[in-house]
Amino acid sequence: MSKKMTVTYYHHSGFSVASDGVLLVFDYWTGKAKKLPDALRITPDVLAGFNEVYVFISHDHVDHFDDVVYSWQQYAPVTYIIADDMPATVMGRRMGPGGTMELSDRLTVKAYGSTDAGVSFLVRLDGVTFFHAGDLNFWHWREVSTARQIEMADEDFRKEITPIQGEEIDVAFFPVDPRMGMHFDAGANYFMLSVKPRVLIPMHFWGRGDVIVEFARRSRSRETEIVAMTTQGQSVGLEIDDDGFMTINMLPLPVLPQEPAETDNRVSLDGYEGADPFHETDLPIDME
Image 1: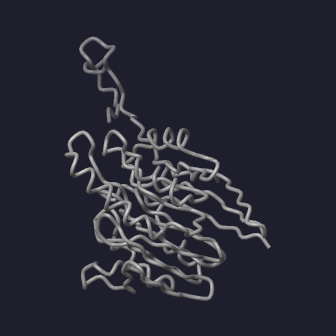
Image 2: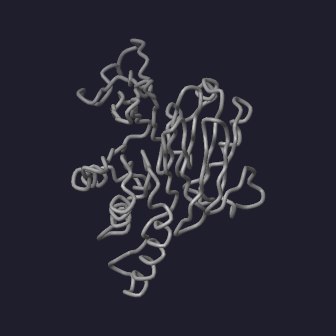
């Protein structure tokens, strides 16, 4: 029997995976000044449709952790899985690199390292494996970093990727950050070459959807399909048959409610000499 799942992109590095009553949420963030429109957020109505909700927080940087997720407990049974270096005030089941956790008979988690704070997560749900990198990436700024800094960053990145090699990953969420300038995609390309996920979904691209679409066009390969999800609220459907063949369907984009247009009922008198044609009469008129 084939498995059907829905992957939804929210903002920055925030995604969810829905499968038969289970919802996985990764690094949910509504953005600076709550940029994510209300209609596209995870709401109480959305949560009420799931029997189990698992929220993963890779680290406590503001662009990966929105404390609104802790308000969800009143609407659904939520389990929080967080990096072990997060502040003690943040509640959840903590995981460090190398840690494993069996959350149900359908769901297991393994934590890997990062080249920044926190961890990355390898999550297997119903036999399908998802990898959320958090801030694991080859972070370097080639135009301004020294040769030694770039060399050290490369060594650190390869060291964190090595333990992941050999994992069979169906879908990977991985940073592709245009702010790094030249070779901004070096980390994602190395990850695809060494780990070979079946699907890679870029994240952490700071609104530069045009760059991500071009990256997907030129970097996809026979081993890895790249799905550019650049619109907030965009979803794809995954269907995996008994032989492991995966079909990816882009779902219709959400339709946001339209704000009522402001109408201007004021009367323009600009075409009249003296601006007011009634100034010598007592004819009543509401000019506003």
